[in-house]
Image 1 (tube, rainbow, N blue to C red):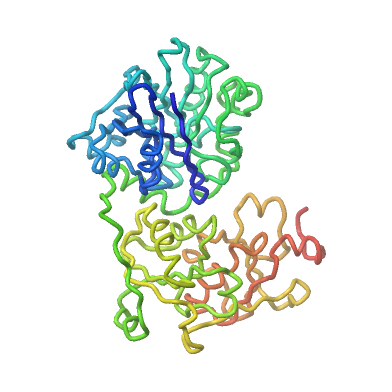
Image 2: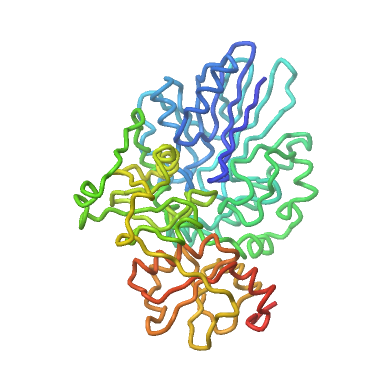
Amino acid sequence: MIIRNFYNDKLAAATYLVGCGATGEAILIDPLRNIAPYLQKAKDEGLRIVAVTETHIHADFLSGLRQVVAETGATGYLSDEGDSDWKYAFAGETGMKLVKHGDKILVGNLSLEVIHTPGHTPEHISFLLVDHPAGDTPHSLFTGDFIFAGDVGRPDLLERAAHVVGTMEKGARVLYNSIKETSELPDSLLIWPAHGAGSACGKSLGGSPVTSLGYERKTNWAFQIHDVDEFVKNILEGQPEPPKYFKEMKRLNKLGPSILSEQVNIPELSSENECRFAGSGVQWIDSRKATTCRKGHKKDALVIPQSKNFITWVGWLLEYELPIGLVVDNGDSVAEVVTDLQSIGLDHVVGWIQGSELDNQSTVAIQEITCQDIQSTDTVLDVRGLGEWLKVHMSESIHIPLGYVKDRAQEIPRNQRLVVHCASGGRSPIAVSLLQQLGYDDVVELQGGMNTVQSNCPQFIAIK
Protein backbone atom coordinates (compact mmCIF):
# COMPACT_ATOMS: atom_id res chain seq x y z
CA MET A 1 0.00 0.00 0.00
CA ILE A 2 1.20 3.46 -0.92
CA ILE A 3 -0.16 6.73 0.55
CA ARG A 4 1.16 10.05 -0.71
CA ASN A 5 0.07 13.42 0.67
CA PHE A 6 0.04 16.58 -1.50
CA TYR A 7 -0.33 19.76 0.54
CA ASN A 8 -1.10 23.18 -0.93
CA ASP A 9 0.03 25.87 1.53
CA LYS A 10 -1.99 28.65 -0.12
CA LEU A 11 -5.24 26.73 0.30
CA ALA A 12 -4.18 24.76 3.39
CA ALA A 13 -5.59 21.80 1.45
CA ALA A 14 -4.49 18.16 1.27
CA THR A 15 -4.95 15.68 -1.58
CA TYR A 16 -4.16 11.99 -1.25
CA LEU A 17 -2.87 9.42 -3.73
CA VAL A 18 -3.56 5.91 -2.45
CA GLY A 19 -2.08 3.06 -4.44
CA CYS A 20 -1.76 -0.69 -4.45
CA GLY A 21 1.85 -1.61 -5.17
CA ALA A 22 0.94 -5.16 -6.17
CA THR A 23 -1.39 -4.17 -9.02
CA GLY A 24 -0.16 -0.65 -9.77
CA GLU A 25 -3.67 0.83 -9.39
CA ALA A 26 -4.35 4.05 -7.49
CA ILE A 27 -7.10 6.44 -6.41
CA LEU A 28 -6.96 10.18 -5.84
CA ILE A 29 -8.94 11.74 -2.99
CA ASP A 30 -9.94 15.44 -2.96
CA PRO A 31 -7.78 16.62 -5.91
CA LEU A 32 -7.25 20.29 -6.66
CA ARG A 33 -7.67 21.60 -10.19
CA ASN A 34 -3.98 21.53 -11.10
CA ILE A 35 -3.55 17.78 -11.42
CA ALA A 36 -0.04 17.75 -12.91
CA PRO A 37 1.71 16.97 -9.57
CA TYR A 38 -0.54 13.94 -9.01
CA LEU A 39 0.06 12.55 -12.48
CA GLN A 40 3.81 12.96 -12.11
CA LYS A 41 3.91 11.33 -8.67
CA ALA A 42 1.79 8.40 -9.88
CA LYS A 43 4.22 7.93 -12.76
CA ASP A 44 7.20 8.09 -10.41
CA GLU A 45 5.62 5.47 -8.14
CA GLY A 46 4.73 3.16 -11.03
CA LEU A 47 1.01 3.69 -10.47
CA ARG A 48 -1.89 4.35 -12.80
CA ILE A 49 -4.82 6.38 -11.53
CA VAL A 50 -7.96 4.29 -12.06
CA ALA A 51 -10.27 6.12 -9.66
CA VAL A 52 -10.81 9.60 -8.24
CA THR A 53 -13.19 10.79 -5.57
CA GLU A 54 -13.89 13.61 -3.16
CA THR A 55 -15.40 13.86 0.28
CA HIS A 56 -17.92 16.62 -0.50
CA ILE A 57 -18.80 19.60 -2.67
CA HIS A 58 -15.90 21.86 -1.72
CA ALA A 59 -16.26 25.54 -0.91
CA ASP A 60 -12.64 26.71 -0.77
CA PHE A 61 -11.19 25.50 -4.08
CA LEU A 62 -12.30 24.28 -7.47
CA SER A 63 -12.32 20.49 -7.62
CA GLY A 64 -9.98 18.64 -9.97
CA LEU A 65 -12.16 15.52 -10.14
CA ARG A 66 -13.57 16.17 -13.60
CA GLN A 67 -10.09 17.12 -14.82
CA VAL A 68 -8.68 13.78 -13.62
CA VAL A 69 -11.49 11.81 -15.29
CA ALA A 70 -10.97 13.71 -18.56
CA GLU A 71 -7.19 13.28 -18.64
CA THR A 72 -6.78 9.75 -17.29
CA GLY A 73 -10.04 7.95 -17.99
CA ALA A 74 -10.35 7.13 -14.29
CA THR A 75 -13.78 6.49 -12.77
CA GLY A 76 -15.06 9.44 -10.74
CA TYR A 77 -16.89 8.46 -7.56
CA LEU A 78 -19.37 11.09 -6.27
CA SER A 79 -21.44 11.20 -3.09
CA ASP A 80 -25.11 10.35 -3.54
CA GLU A 81 -25.90 11.33 0.05
CA GLY A 82 -27.63 14.51 1.17
CA ASP A 83 -30.86 16.01 -0.11
CA SER A 84 -31.73 17.14 -3.63
CA ASP A 85 -29.99 20.50 -3.16
CA TRP A 86 -26.63 18.78 -2.72
CA LYS A 87 -26.45 16.45 -5.70
CA TYR A 88 -23.78 16.73 -8.39
CA ALA A 89 -25.26 18.09 -11.62
CA PHE A 90 -22.62 16.22 -13.70
CA ALA A 91 -23.16 12.83 -12.06
CA GLY A 92 -24.66 11.44 -15.29
CA GLU A 93 -21.52 12.11 -17.35
CA THR A 94 -19.49 9.24 -18.77
CA GLY A 95 -17.01 7.96 -16.22
CA MET A 96 -18.97 9.10 -13.14
CA LYS A 97 -20.44 6.76 -10.52
CA LEU A 98 -22.56 7.63 -7.47
CA VAL A 99 -21.81 6.06 -4.08
CA LYS A 100 -23.68 5.91 -0.79
CA HIS A 101 -22.96 4.87 2.78
CA GLY A 102 -21.67 1.30 2.91
CA ASP A 103 -20.51 1.14 -0.72
CA LYS A 104 -16.94 0.06 -1.37
CA ILE A 105 -14.46 1.35 -3.93
CA LEU A 106 -11.95 -1.34 -4.90
CA VAL A 107 -8.43 -0.33 -5.92
CA GLY A 108 -6.27 -3.39 -6.48
CA ASN A 109 -6.03 -5.21 -3.15
CA LEU A 110 -7.33 -2.18 -1.27
CA SER A 111 -10.89 -1.18 -0.46
CA LEU A 112 -12.31 2.16 0.58
CA GLU A 113 -15.66 1.93 2.34
CA VAL A 114 -17.92 4.96 2.00
CA ILE A 115 -19.08 6.35 5.36
CA HIS A 116 -21.69 9.12 5.39
CA THR A 117 -20.35 11.80 7.76
CA PRO A 118 -22.71 14.79 7.40
CA GLY A 119 -22.54 18.02 9.37
CA HIS A 120 -20.01 20.14 7.53
CA THR A 121 -22.24 19.56 4.49
CA PRO A 122 -25.22 17.21 4.03
CA GLU A 123 -23.55 15.06 1.35
CA HIS A 124 -20.18 14.71 3.11
CA ILE A 125 -18.60 11.24 3.05
CA SER A 126 -15.37 9.78 4.43
CA PHE A 127 -13.39 6.78 3.20
CA LEU A 128 -12.35 3.87 5.41
CA LEU A 129 -9.26 2.20 3.94
CA VAL A 130 -8.45 -1.49 4.37
CA ASP A 131 -5.25 -3.07 3.05
CA HIS A 132 -6.59 -6.61 2.63
CA PRO A 133 -3.28 -8.47 2.26
CA ALA A 134 -2.42 -7.16 5.74
CA GLY A 135 -5.78 -8.20 7.23
CA ASP A 136 -9.26 -6.79 7.70
CA THR A 137 -8.41 -4.17 10.34
CA PRO A 138 -9.07 -0.67 8.93
CA HIS A 139 -5.85 1.27 8.37
CA SER A 140 -6.94 4.84 7.64
CA LEU A 141 -9.90 7.16 7.44
CA PHE A 142 -9.82 9.98 4.87
CA THR A 143 -12.06 12.47 6.63
CA GLY A 144 -12.19 15.47 4.31
CA ASP A 145 -13.74 18.32 6.31
CA PHE A 146 -15.22 16.03 8.99
CA ILE A 147 -12.37 15.43 11.47
CA PHE A 148 -9.24 17.59 11.41
CA ALA A 149 -6.15 17.47 13.59
CA GLY A 150 -7.41 19.30 16.68
CA ASP A 151 -10.77 20.37 15.26
CA VAL A 152 -13.81 19.37 13.24
CA GLY A 153 -15.37 20.88 10.12
CA ARG A 154 -17.52 23.94 10.60
CA PRO A 155 -21.26 23.42 9.96
CA ASP A 156 -22.09 27.06 9.30
CA LEU A 157 -20.71 27.59 5.79
CA LEU A 158 -23.99 26.82 4.03
CA GLU A 159 -25.59 29.67 5.93
CA ARG A 160 -22.72 32.15 6.27
CA ALA A 161 -21.12 31.62 2.85
CA ALA A 162 -23.84 30.15 0.63
CA HIS A 163 -26.67 32.02 2.45
CA VAL A 164 -28.83 28.94 2.96
CA VAL A 165 -30.73 30.33 5.96
CA GLY A 166 -31.45 28.14 8.97
CA THR A 167 -28.87 25.44 8.26
CA MET A 168 -25.99 26.06 10.63
CA GLU A 169 -27.58 24.93 13.91
CA LYS A 170 -29.14 21.94 12.19
CA GLY A 171 -25.77 21.10 10.65
CA ALA A 172 -24.06 21.41 14.05
CA ARG A 173 -26.45 18.87 15.56
CA VAL A 174 -25.91 16.49 12.65
CA LEU A 175 -22.14 16.89 13.01
CA TYR A 176 -22.38 16.02 16.71
CA ASN A 177 -24.12 12.77 15.79
CA SER A 178 -21.53 11.99 13.10
CA ILE A 179 -18.75 12.33 15.67
CA LYS A 180 -20.57 10.04 18.10
CA GLU A 181 -21.03 7.44 15.36
CA THR A 182 -17.25 7.00 15.08
CA SER A 183 -17.29 5.23 18.46
CA GLU A 184 -17.12 1.78 16.84
CA LEU A 185 -13.92 2.60 14.96
CA PRO A 186 -10.54 1.64 16.47
CA ASP A 187 -8.15 4.09 18.16
CA SER A 188 -5.38 2.89 15.85
CA LEU A 189 -7.10 4.34 12.78
CA LEU A 190 -5.00 6.98 11.01
CA ILE A 191 -6.88 10.18 10.19
CA TRP A 192 -6.00 12.00 6.96
CA PRO A 193 -7.90 15.34 6.83
CA ALA A 194 -8.45 17.57 3.81
CA HIS A 195 -7.17 20.73 5.51
CA GLY A 196 -4.59 21.99 7.97
CA ALA A 197 -3.78 25.13 9.93
CA GLY A 198 -4.82 28.31 8.15
CA SER A 199 -7.92 26.92 6.49
CA ALA A 200 -11.20 28.79 6.92
CA CYS A 201 -13.01 25.42 7.07
CA GLY A 202 -12.55 25.37 10.85
CA LYS A 203 -11.37 27.63 13.64
CA SER A 204 -8.48 25.79 15.33
CA LEU A 205 -7.00 23.31 12.87
CA GLY A 206 -3.67 21.78 13.82
CA GLY A 207 -0.61 21.66 11.62
CA SER A 208 -0.05 17.91 11.66
CA PRO A 209 -0.59 16.30 8.23
CA VAL A 210 -1.88 13.08 9.84
CA THR A 211 -3.29 12.13 13.23
CA SER A 212 -5.03 9.13 14.78
CA LEU A 213 -8.57 8.64 15.95
CA GLY A 214 -7.32 7.65 19.40
CA TYR A 215 -5.29 10.83 19.73
CA GLU A 216 -8.21 13.00 18.61
CA ARG A 217 -10.51 11.27 21.09
CA LYS A 218 -8.15 12.34 23.89
CA THR A 219 -7.18 15.83 22.69
CA ASN A 220 -9.68 17.23 20.16
CA TRP A 221 -12.13 19.60 21.88
CA ALA A 222 -15.08 18.26 19.85
CA PHE A 223 -14.68 14.76 21.30
CA GLN A 224 -14.70 16.10 24.88
CA ILE A 225 -18.24 17.52 24.73
CA HIS A 226 -21.06 15.11 25.46
CA ASP A 227 -24.00 17.50 25.41
CA VAL A 228 -25.38 18.43 22.00
CA ASP A 229 -26.47 21.95 23.01
CA GLU A 230 -23.03 22.72 24.42
CA PHE A 231 -21.46 21.35 21.25
CA VAL A 232 -23.67 23.55 19.05
CA LYS A 233 -22.71 26.63 21.06
CA ASN A 234 -19.00 25.84 20.89
CA ILE A 235 -18.84 24.91 17.20
CA LEU A 236 -20.66 28.04 16.05
CA GLU A 237 -18.68 30.49 18.20
CA GLY A 238 -15.52 32.12 16.90
CA GLN A 239 -15.55 30.76 13.35
CA PRO A 240 -13.50 32.91 10.93
CA GLU A 241 -15.26 34.99 8.29
CA PRO A 242 -15.81 32.76 5.22
CA PRO A 243 -14.36 34.35 2.07
CA LYS A 244 -16.93 35.53 -0.47
CA TYR A 245 -15.69 33.16 -3.14
CA PHE A 246 -16.80 30.14 -1.09
CA LYS A 247 -20.34 30.61 -2.39
CA GLU A 248 -19.08 30.60 -5.99
CA MET A 249 -16.98 27.48 -5.36
CA LYS A 250 -20.03 25.63 -4.04
CA ARG A 251 -21.97 26.57 -7.17
CA LEU A 252 -19.22 25.68 -9.64
CA ASN A 253 -18.27 22.43 -7.90
CA LYS A 254 -21.90 21.33 -7.88
CA LEU A 255 -22.39 22.14 -11.57
CA GLY A 256 -19.01 20.76 -12.59
CA PRO A 257 -15.78 22.76 -13.00
CA SER A 258 -14.77 23.39 -16.59
CA ILE A 259 -11.97 21.23 -17.99
CA LEU A 260 -8.73 23.11 -18.49
CA SER A 261 -6.91 22.71 -21.77
CA GLU A 262 -3.15 22.91 -22.02
CA GLN A 263 -1.61 26.00 -20.42
CA VAL A 264 -2.68 29.05 -22.41
CA ASN A 265 0.07 31.50 -23.28
CA ILE A 266 -0.74 34.72 -21.41
CA PRO A 267 0.60 37.66 -23.46
CA GLU A 268 2.83 40.41 -22.16
CA LEU A 269 1.18 43.78 -22.66
CA SER A 270 2.94 46.91 -23.78
CA SER A 271 1.58 50.31 -22.77
CA GLU A 272 -0.19 50.45 -26.15
CA ASN A 273 -1.77 47.02 -25.69
CA GLU A 274 -2.83 47.91 -22.17
CA CYS A 275 -4.75 50.88 -23.53
CA ARG A 276 -7.00 48.47 -25.42
CA PHE A 277 -8.47 47.37 -22.12
CA ALA A 278 -9.24 50.86 -20.81
CA GLY A 279 -12.87 50.96 -19.75
CA SER A 280 -13.35 47.24 -20.40
CA GLY A 281 -13.60 46.29 -16.72
CA VAL A 282 -10.24 44.56 -16.46
CA GLN A 283 -9.31 43.90 -12.84
CA TRP A 284 -5.62 44.54 -12.30
CA ILE A 285 -3.65 42.69 -9.63
CA ASP A 286 -0.20 43.89 -8.65
CA SER A 287 1.20 40.62 -7.32
CA ARG A 288 4.72 41.84 -6.55
CA LYS A 289 6.12 41.95 -3.01
CA ALA A 290 4.48 44.42 -0.65
CA THR A 291 7.80 46.24 -0.15
CA THR A 292 7.96 46.85 -3.90
CA CYS A 293 4.32 47.88 -4.23
CA ARG A 294 4.59 50.37 -1.38
CA LYS A 295 7.16 52.28 -3.44
CA GLY A 296 4.76 52.45 -6.38
CA HIS A 297 2.04 50.13 -7.67
CA LYS A 298 -0.20 50.38 -10.70
CA LYS A 299 -2.79 53.05 -9.92
CA ASP A 300 -5.87 51.02 -10.77
CA ALA A 301 -4.54 47.73 -9.39
CA LEU A 302 -5.23 45.86 -6.20
CA VAL A 303 -1.99 45.10 -4.38
CA ILE A 304 -2.22 41.39 -3.57
CA PRO A 305 1.30 40.01 -3.15
CA GLN A 306 1.89 36.48 -4.38
CA SER A 307 2.26 35.01 -0.92
CA LYS A 308 0.61 32.33 1.19
CA ASN A 309 -2.68 34.26 1.36
CA PHE A 310 -2.82 35.29 -2.30
CA ILE A 311 -5.65 32.92 -3.26
CA THR A 312 -7.75 33.92 -0.26
CA TRP A 313 -7.65 37.62 -1.08
CA VAL A 314 -8.17 37.39 -4.82
CA GLY A 315 -11.16 35.20 -3.98
CA TRP A 316 -12.48 37.79 -1.57
CA LEU A 317 -11.95 40.85 -3.74
CA LEU A 318 -12.20 39.98 -7.45
CA GLU A 319 -15.35 39.66 -9.54
CA TYR A 320 -15.75 36.37 -11.39
CA GLU A 321 -17.42 37.86 -14.46
CA LEU A 322 -14.62 40.36 -15.23
CA PRO A 323 -11.26 39.75 -16.96
CA ILE A 324 -7.98 40.00 -15.04
CA GLY A 325 -4.68 41.71 -15.77
CA LEU A 326 -1.46 41.03 -13.87
CA VAL A 327 1.46 43.19 -12.78
CA VAL A 328 4.46 40.98 -12.04
CA ASP A 329 8.22 41.25 -11.55
CA ASN A 330 8.84 39.32 -14.75
CA GLY A 331 7.31 36.66 -16.95
CA ASP A 332 8.74 33.82 -14.85
CA SER A 333 6.07 34.31 -12.17
CA VAL A 334 3.05 34.47 -14.51
CA ALA A 335 2.43 30.71 -14.68
CA GLU A 336 2.28 30.34 -10.89
CA VAL A 337 -0.09 33.30 -10.51
CA VAL A 338 -2.35 31.93 -13.25
CA THR A 339 -2.38 28.48 -11.62
CA ASP A 340 -3.33 30.06 -8.29
CA LEU A 341 -6.17 31.97 -9.93
CA GLN A 342 -7.41 28.88 -11.75
CA SER A 343 -7.49 26.95 -8.48
CA ILE A 344 -10.58 28.98 -7.55
CA GLY A 345 -11.99 29.36 -11.06
CA LEU A 346 -10.61 32.79 -11.99
CA ASP A 347 -9.65 31.71 -15.49
CA HIS A 348 -9.94 34.84 -17.64
CA VAL A 349 -6.45 36.41 -17.51
CA VAL A 350 -5.93 38.72 -20.50
CA GLY A 351 -2.29 39.64 -20.06
CA TRP A 352 0.55 40.78 -17.86
CA ILE A 353 2.75 43.84 -17.38
CA GLN A 354 6.27 43.91 -16.00
CA GLY A 355 6.21 46.21 -12.98
CA SER A 356 9.53 47.84 -13.80
CA GLU A 357 8.06 49.08 -17.08
CA LEU A 358 5.44 51.22 -15.33
CA ASP A 359 6.18 54.96 -15.40
CA ASN A 360 5.63 57.38 -12.56
CA GLN A 361 2.42 58.67 -14.10
CA SER A 362 0.78 55.25 -13.87
CA THR A 363 1.83 54.37 -10.32
CA VAL A 364 0.90 55.43 -6.82
CA ALA A 365 2.82 54.83 -3.61
CA ILE A 366 1.58 53.59 -0.27
CA GLN A 367 2.72 55.93 2.48
CA GLU A 368 3.63 54.37 5.81
CA ILE A 369 3.47 56.08 9.19
CA THR A 370 4.37 54.89 12.69
CA CYS A 371 1.93 54.80 15.58
CA GLN A 372 3.69 57.86 17.02
CA ASP A 373 2.56 59.79 13.91
CA ILE A 374 -1.17 59.20 14.49
CA GLN A 375 -3.04 62.47 14.99
CA SER A 376 -6.25 63.09 16.92
CA THR A 377 -7.95 64.09 13.67
CA ASP A 378 -7.11 60.79 11.93
CA THR A 379 -9.59 57.98 11.36
CA VAL A 380 -8.07 54.57 12.16
CA LEU A 381 -9.40 51.63 10.15
CA ASP A 382 -8.71 48.12 11.51
CA VAL A 383 -9.05 45.46 8.77
CA ARG A 384 -8.33 42.38 10.89
CA GLY A 385 -10.85 39.63 11.54
CA LEU A 386 -13.47 39.77 14.26
CA GLY A 387 -11.64 37.33 16.51
CA GLU A 388 -8.50 39.46 16.40
CA TRP A 389 -10.50 42.61 17.07
CA LEU A 390 -12.20 41.14 20.14
CA LYS A 391 -8.85 40.22 21.69
CA VAL A 392 -7.28 43.65 21.31
CA HIS A 393 -7.95 46.82 19.35
CA MET A 394 -7.29 50.53 19.28
CA SER A 395 -9.73 52.91 20.94
CA GLU A 396 -11.89 55.01 18.61
CA SER A 397 -10.97 52.87 15.60
CA ILE A 398 -13.39 51.59 12.96
CA HIS A 399 -13.41 47.84 12.50
CA ILE A 400 -14.18 46.40 9.06
CA PRO A 401 -12.52 43.10 8.07
CA LEU A 402 -10.61 43.44 4.80
CA GLY A 403 -13.01 41.28 2.81
CA TYR A 404 -15.91 43.61 3.64
CA VAL A 405 -14.22 46.98 3.09
CA LYS A 406 -15.66 47.51 -0.40
CA ASP A 407 -19.19 46.57 0.70
CA ARG A 408 -19.07 48.82 3.75
CA ALA A 409 -17.13 51.76 2.30
CA GLN A 410 -20.01 54.12 3.17
CA GLU A 411 -19.03 53.67 6.84
CA ILE A 412 -15.54 55.08 6.21
CA PRO A 413 -15.26 58.90 6.31
CA ARG A 414 -13.55 60.73 3.46
CA ASN A 415 -12.99 64.12 5.07
CA GLN A 416 -9.95 63.22 7.18
CA ARG A 417 -6.77 61.20 6.91
CA LEU A 418 -7.40 57.46 7.01
CA VAL A 419 -4.85 55.28 8.83
CA VAL A 420 -5.20 51.59 7.91
CA HIS A 421 -3.76 48.71 9.89
CA CYS A 422 -3.94 44.92 10.25
CA ALA A 423 -1.93 42.64 12.56
CA SER A 424 1.56 42.98 11.12
CA GLY A 425 1.37 44.49 7.62
CA GLY A 426 0.18 41.62 5.42
CA ARG A 427 -3.37 42.81 4.78
CA SER A 428 -3.02 46.58 5.16
CA PRO A 429 -1.36 47.27 1.77
CA ILE A 430 -4.19 45.34 0.11
CA ALA A 431 -6.69 47.49 1.98
CA VAL A 432 -4.91 50.74 1.11
CA SER A 433 -4.83 49.88 -2.59
CA LEU A 434 -8.53 48.99 -2.47
CA LEU A 435 -9.37 52.30 -0.80
CA GLN A 436 -7.26 54.13 -3.39
CA GLN A 437 -9.37 52.41 -6.06
CA LEU A 438 -12.48 53.64 -4.27
CA GLY A 439 -11.28 57.24 -4.44
CA TYR A 440 -9.77 57.74 -0.98
CA ASP A 441 -6.93 60.19 -1.61
CA ASP A 442 -5.64 60.68 1.93
CA VAL A 443 -5.02 57.14 3.10
CA VAL A 444 -1.87 55.79 4.76
CA GLU A 445 -0.70 52.47 6.18
CA LEU A 446 0.24 51.98 9.83
CA GLN A 447 3.67 50.39 9.77
CA GLY A 448 3.84 47.06 11.60
CA GLY A 449 0.13 46.99 12.41
CA MET A 450 -1.33 46.06 15.78
CA ASN A 451 1.80 44.15 16.77
CA THR A 452 3.80 47.39 16.68
CA VAL A 453 1.08 49.40 18.39
CA GLN A 454 1.03 47.00 21.33
CA SER A 455 4.81 47.24 21.66
CA ASN A 456 5.36 50.95 21.01
CA CYS A 457 2.07 52.81 21.59
CA PRO A 458 0.12 51.04 24.36
CA GLN A 459 -1.77 54.27 25.06
CA PHE A 460 -3.91 53.57 22.01
CA ILE A 461 -5.04 50.10 23.15
CA ALA A 462 -8.66 49.75 24.22
CA ILE A 463 -8.81 46.02 25.10
CA LYS A 464 -5.93 43.88 26.31
